[in-house]
Image (cartoon, rainbow, N blue to C red; front, side, top):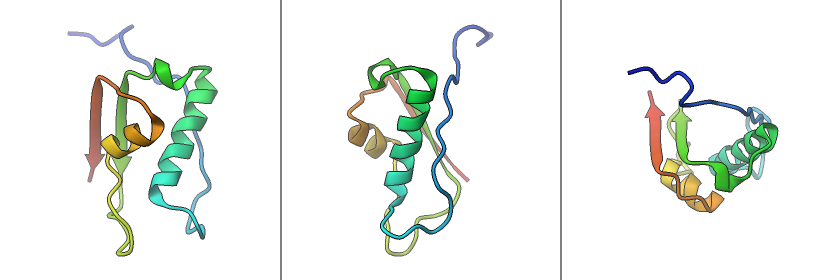
Length: 86
């Protein structure tokens, strides 16, 4: 089965990097996604899948950001949700 012509990443969203006072992990996820949606010329209603990547464990005073949490805060209900954590 080929995925050619079936799926596309069409936008990129950047956020500031490093320890930034007053910012949470969730706020960085949401900002990056909103920027990527805008970069792609889409709306959040166009999003039908969400894959979140979490490279580092959450800080001791924080919580793990799940793709379900991200989708809820974006106000979307994608048909596909996944998280890659290594």
